[in-house]
Length: 135
Image (cartoon, rainbow, N blue to C red; front, side, top):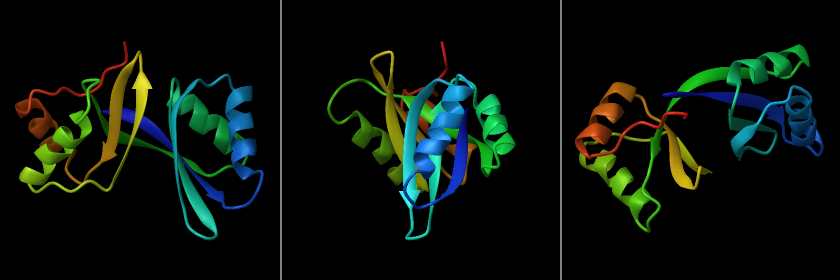
């Protein structure tokens, strides 16, 4: 498990830039950003070096944010590794609410949310995969 910062923001020009500027001023190193939007609002999901500090800086600036635990798994840097990982969950009937990837030290890392993190961890381990750890 790793922590993710979720930022709730209006879908209008300049808002993402303002959020990123807040994080820049707080000296936060970003590793991954994912944005899911509707016509009026979006959720920006961020993986960074200091998630608690990032959320604190955003909240101090009046930007709604929340910390959440998400699952992350390091994959082999080969074609099909993501498909193989997702297939493990499908075979066990585990749904993913969302997922996104980033590279960390030249290795792909898949971040995902499911309604049963313990089951996800067991599926990964039985499939020969391990949860991502910062090193």
